[in-house]
Length: 461
Image (cartoon, rainbow, N blue to C red; front, top):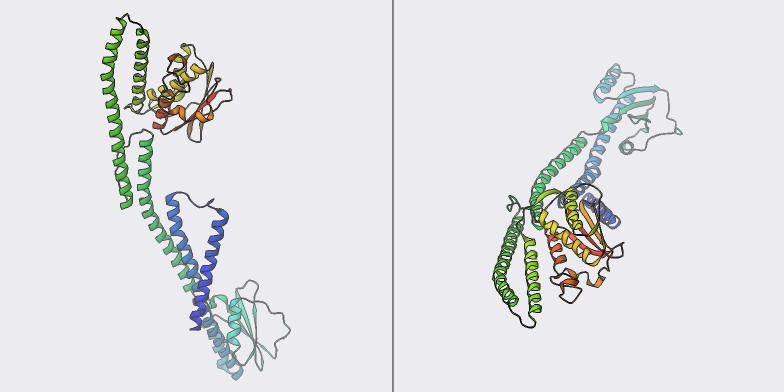
């Protein structure tokens, strides 16, 4: 019962030490080396208990089983040495004694020598304080002979000196006599079994994570406007449920966009006819205010066309891989022919998968705004952290920081009037942001080094 309590205390102490070490690592490292991926965390969840089990099992084995085996082996060796000492002391001159010693050397792997008329030096400097020496000393302590134990420097063997009446018996015992092969067998079995179990668990976890990864990739493709190809829910029931929810969401969003585009096309067809008829009648009428009404109709047509252009930002144009520098060069050349001053700087050539027409519309809207409010525009293109980075600067008056989010709203204008001479209809930046977001990117407004406005675009490569 006392041995069980002692073993329980040792196991409890080991578990407490492991828990303190884990708490210390969590406090000091704060996630710096711990994995952030789902597969890495799954592996950590499996690996840490497995290592803890190995440590506890090793502690139990080496503190109990190994101690018990080594004590029994030491007792056996002490008994053999005592028997040898008894034979030499009781039958020192017998003819059978030499044969018996020779047989014991062969069977017990001892090297035996006897020094007649010698005594042990009580002041001799003894070496060796290992656990094996301590076990042998405890076993020999129960006999009736004076003895000394010495361990050689290389620890290949242990020397045992026994004081007899006629001299000193020297027994050289190899260290392998104190070990059991079960120690190595247990360690080997424990390591191999742990590796096998960990590999099996890793394969199962990898299959589960693969389903989550495919779902994340499908959601990312859908969010950036890329086609979602051959996706079907798989994996655990919870992952399948998330996959079905994603497919239902995708269908609802696609249906909503299609219905919105169809509705706006119908509105366009219904409104253009009466507006054209009104415009024709007013042009044939010589009444006061007819010219103002014609201007209002022109403005309504522009707003309608802009609204339809905004809706087409969600269009069906397929994604294509294009060389961005060539595309931007074409856009800039067209605007330069209209008298716009644009400085284009491209750091490196880069291919990107986009909708070319939609992307051209977004860049054209931004540069048109710069031309409307500033004298010069500066376009810089580069690659930063796996993103296509585009900055468009101008030397105009800029936009106050408090209004930068509002200008992305549909039909919002800093100029409260609807006069086309002082600005557009308030859809340029709205359409641009709609297109950039549809490509999975982001667009922000900042202060420009040119004292005007900076439009910053980031698109995933």
